[in-house]
Structures are given as C-alpha cells and as structure tokens.
Length: 130
Image (cartoon, rainbow, N blue to C red; front, side):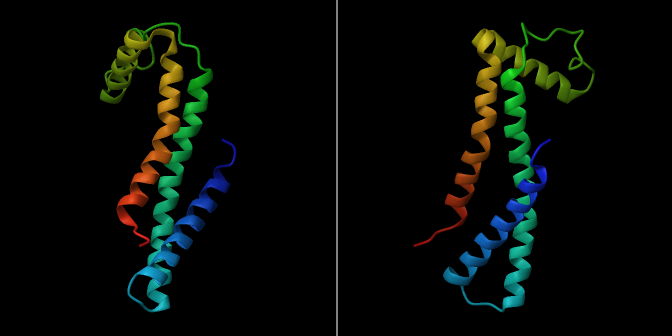
C-alpha cells in the first residue's frame, strides 16, 4: 500500500500541532510539559484515525475498479459461517438489488466521503475558534 508511512507521519503531526495550537491559544494556560504530553496523546489518536481514513479511501479506489457481475452467492468467500461475512454479503446483495451494476461505484463514493465528513463533524463538535 503506497504512502502509508506518509499518512502516519502527517496524521501525528497534524493532530499534535492542531491540539497544541488550540490549547495554547484558546484554553486556560498550562505547563508546557502537560501541553506536549496531551498533544502527543492526541497525535497518537490521530494516527489511528488517519489509518482508518487511509484504508477507507484505498478500499474505495480498489472497489471502484472491481468487477462484480451480480449478487454474491453462497459459494463465495464471504458466505462463511462468521457473522461479518454474512453481514457484508447481505449489505452488498441489498445494494446490488437497489442499484444494479452501479453498486461498486456508489459504495466507492460512500467510502471516499466517510473520512472527510467524519473529520469535519469531529472538528465542528470539539473545537470552537470564537
């Protein structure tokens, strides 16, 4: 998977800098050591969310070019006895019955939109720059 190291470094850096700047300028003044520790913790959390966003976007690219010709049957690798496989198979078959051959494109667009929209919602709810 290309650029995963870049995503990890940028996620940590952006999370660290954004939290450091916000707490330094808009919240009560605290010691620099506490501020660096809290910003580092937020940076580590940003790595986790950055990876999730990266894999969703990368999965959307793979799904965009994938060619499934019809609903997934019981002989597929997703039809195992495990619950996640059955859930994915049923969701895909439902979407295929609704959208037909455009199902992969629609699922890919949804995977592209989830990371930026969830990031926007998180920033809007937790940070106020008034």
